Length: 98
Image 1 (cartoon, one colour):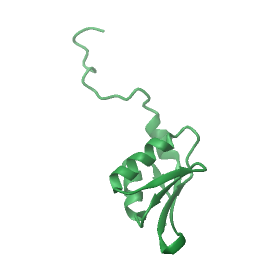
Image 2 (cartoon, one colour):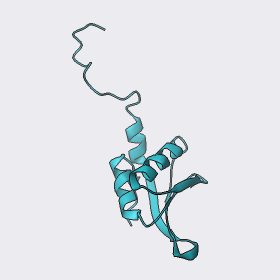
Image 3 (cartoon, helix red, strand yellow):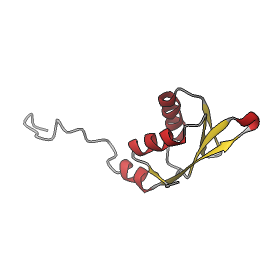
Image 4 (cartoon, helix red, strand yellow):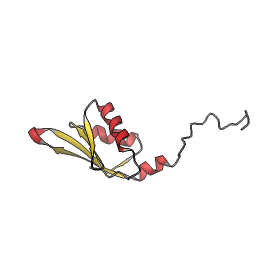
């Protein structure tokens, strides 16, 4: 490349279609009540190529709560359904309307 390349300053990801893949997924977010009345937010509907572990870690950090990944779904502790929906949309995922 020459030193005068006008596209050097653009922030183009290595895989520009990855955002499109996320947007075409329709995730389901719901709240379940577990033992002793504890709330758990369940996120389902991921395609197989999604790095669920990294996303779960990001969500747990953003919410300041615990959670886990089980059977291709993310479980977040607490009643955070509204905030989880916002965070997923901010990251480019399609979320089913409740």
